[in-house]
Picture 1 (tube, helix red, strand yellow):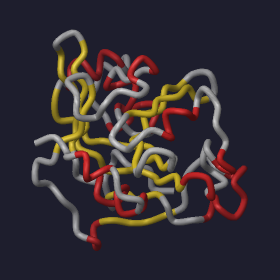
Picture 2 (cartoon, rainbow, N blue to C red; picture 1 turned 180 degrees about the vertical axis):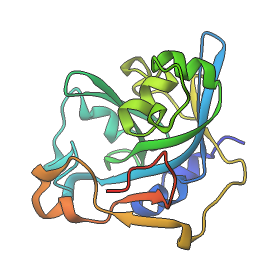
Picture 3 (tube, one colour; picture 1 turned 90 degrees about the vertical axis):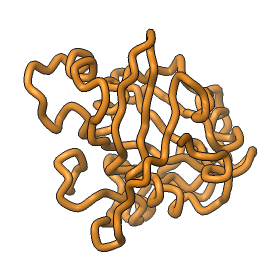
Length: 198
């Protein structure tokens, strides 16, 4: 069952991030479905969050998607190399987002391995946000797409993790955010090889 709009549109981005663990992220490209369940995600708390692209109410061509109503994809290019997939949350005008950092592949694994140029299945296939996007074929062409559509979507299949199975930790790669870099806004499933430990 695809997640309802209400899942995305409340203003507690940390709660949404935590609750995305165990949800299934899928894409369907050229009739081929690939995806798996989320085991690592990190929150970006809008205009007050120094790590957010929208910090200080920054509005650019890139960030305008973040200001849309929750339930759409925000995809941007990082370091000129990696596509990064984020879930936009909250109401229109409040630029909250969740970066999906790790999934456990369950569907279309052969296609995902081909996209990642892997001959042997191993966690690196979808361990890290750039890897997730590449494996699922996510690109900036999907920026602004509804997450209730038929190209990219998120499902609830009844999988969940207890608080004992989940850790909250600082985000990765946001040292520029100074004290905000230390906030425990990254959630991951303990022991999953598809989630970063640091």
